[in-house]
Length: 194
Image (cartoon, rainbow, N blue to C red; front, side):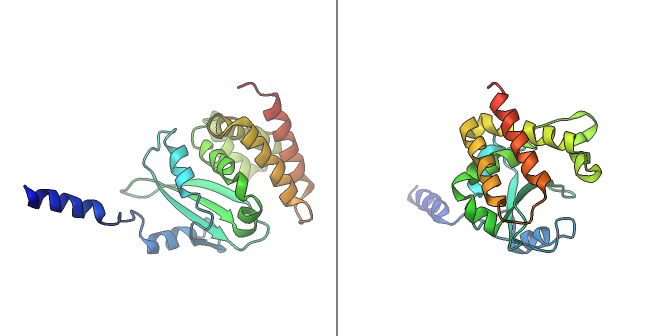
């Protein structure tokens, strides 16, 4: 009996094995579909937040890979990485400068990114807007993610993150569309009922 108790104690004391090997995370973060400027690393310790938000979705228990970049024009993004013969992986990108500037708002940003997973739009419209450059559809897709994210992180937190994103963009070479879209999303979320 003591042997079983000791074996159980030793198993508990062992560090948890990461499900995603470093080489696999490296392969995912450097995949051409993501871009060539991303490398694996949870620079801002957001993986726990992402996993907590995933518990609100059909993707409970999905593994998470965090990528970061030195690209000064990048912000944050999230995507479901479909794997062959295995479970999907949720991949999140956070640029170093955006993460540092938005540190107190990253919880809300991660809620927004995960919220994209639970939004279902007619004909996959949210996936298409990126390719078709449909600004109206883009704002509504992003607003829907803001709204769902606000149910998890709180409306004040999402609004603060959107306003902080505008501040982050000031003085950078973002298009006027970047600011207009954020301002419209703030307006829509302020008007949305909870």
